[in-house]
Amino acid sequence: MQIILATSNKGKVKEIRALFEKDEVVPFSEILGPMEIEENGGTFAENALIKARTIFEELGRDDVIVVSDDSGITVPALGGEPGIFSARYAGEGAGDRDNLEKLVAKLKEKGLAEAPAYYTAAIAIVAPGAEYVVHGWMHGKVITTPRGDGGFGYDPMFVPEGFDKTLGELKPEVKKELSHRSKALKLAQPIIEMLKKRAVR
Ligand code: ITT
Image 1 (cartoon, protein in one colour):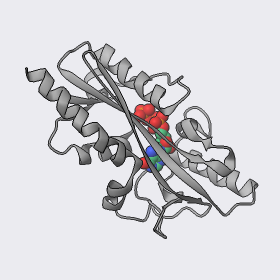
Image 2: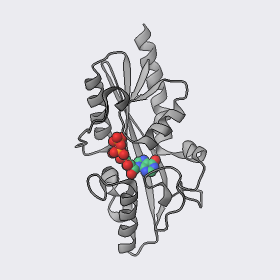
Image 3: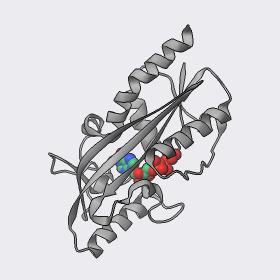
């Protein structure tokens, strides 16, 4: 049974594939081509469901499991920004670097060299007659001196709890062990296994 990823983010595809090594994991764009999905939910969970439902409906197949990820970084000292707006913090169409630079600027405006922060990932799983959402979090701090080019998004400015290096500097295996996405996907795994078994009966 194919797992179709309802994401256009290459960083997410790489990390999700690394956790589902035994499964056939296909980004939706390889089947449907590029597509913009309007994320107008008010929470990570709502946006994850919007993405997974849209792709499930577009595919119109009952032999697939669609998995989406809606995620972002939250900085309590900035009133929770950027939160669900992480991908478009510096405006619609903004790139990872623009968003990171905006977050650095916002911290500096407040006179902060660092601040506690956490990543959230909501993973939605949609299959025939079934919808689930699971969450994972990673706590740490954001700093105004980004370092390293590993990971994606805000990783060069995020230092996980218990470390003194950023996710841009740490090896991918460290992020794989700790990340919000990995934690949510570990909860998604038994749900996906159950859906696969259900499909062969
Ligand atoms: P899709 O909607 O196509 O999945 P997207 O990048 O637009 O891709 P989101 O709406 O979920 O995805 O926005 C997530 C943003 O949060 C992402 O673009 C990064 O800026 C940030 N983010 C999420 N997880 C991250 C991670 O593990 N490392 C660094 N930044 C992350």
